[in-house]
Amino acid sequence: MHTIEPFYNWRGLYIAAEDPNSPFYDREYSEFEFTDAIYNYVIHPQWDNIDSPSLFIKILFVDYETNFAVIELFGEWNDPINNDIMLLKRDIIEVLMQSGIHKFVLIAENLLNFHGDSDDYYEEWFEEVQDEDGWIALVNTRPHVLKEIQDYDLDYYFLLGGELEEVDWRTSTPDQFLNRMEEYIQKRIG
Image (tube, rainbow, N blue to C red; front, side):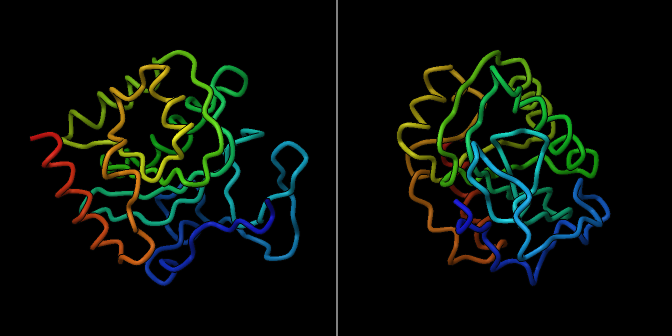
């Protein structure tokens, strides 16, 4: 697992550690010292720790003019044991929302499992972004993870499935990616 790195091609456009509005502002990273692990497997040091033993993230891009953020997920999302949605919502999402972000893309291709619990935080997040004409989309979710999310009836709060399961986002610029997401979401909502 230590060889799975967060996507880095947009680093020339955005670095969360250099963004004063980011929850990871001023964070220093090591390329060589592995300090975090998921279930005794060390992970690449570029992933950001959100105080969950199993879920790590990387804020890949934020645009405060278009109110858009892309966050890559890594590991296991486990609400019953770690309350990961609370950690993500309170410590990451709300910080971004205070700066005007209300369109969230969660890249889920490295999300290995999902264990849901209560939908309170999901509902709260959904209502807050909806009030601002925003949305929350999960992109490239593994089929078994998609089913796990749907089994907890959380697909009401996320845009997921269909075309969002095979998005070639890595070859796009953030602006191209946002435009594609907006077009797709307008078709789906409208």
